[in-house]
Length: 74
Image (cartoon, rainbow, N blue to C red; front, side, top):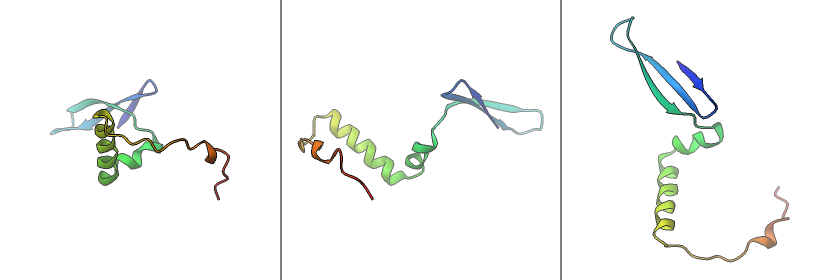
């Protein structure tokens, strides 16, 4: 069972060995928009690799994308 604590955190309660034991664990809420990333190990690894590369300065300037700002997407 999850109990929301504020807007960003929740408390997760899970049954243990006996019916009278309950274990609580604090966790952060993951939005539905971002949940797919955590459920897709390949995509998550790609994003984490990109973050590591950016932190190490391994970036390539692709220029401005301003010309595409008003482009309508089908």
